[in-house]
Image 1 (cartoon, helix red, strand yellow):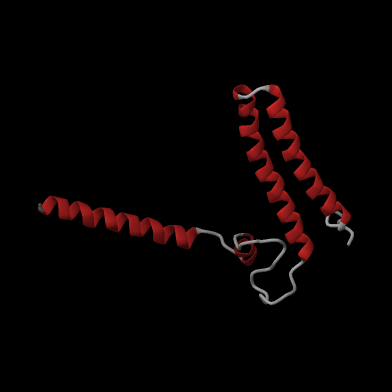
Image 2 (cartoon, one colour):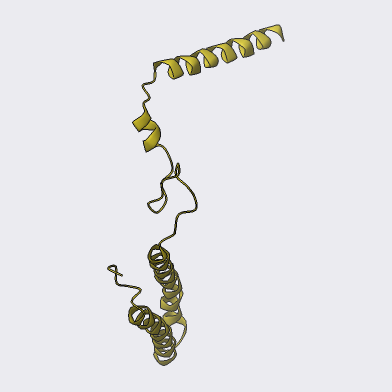
Length: 117
């Protein structure tokens, strides 16, 4: 039992010495601290949090999420082709793609896809 206690103390001592040496010997500068800070949508985390948010970034994100979910929903439609006849599969696929194209046309009509605005 005493041997296990000595081993635990020895392991704790060695690990603490290794951590202390890594802190002392590491070369850190201000630029390293800046590189390891979080970066989200062009915001500087050290500045004020009450700056105006670009609505265009938000709309592009929403468009990306819509089309990302679209891909996840198209895969089961492909598997549906094996279970149903061609006519039903075509109607379901056409209706689904039509809804997505109407949404894309609406976004295009509202100038959400223009980066210059």
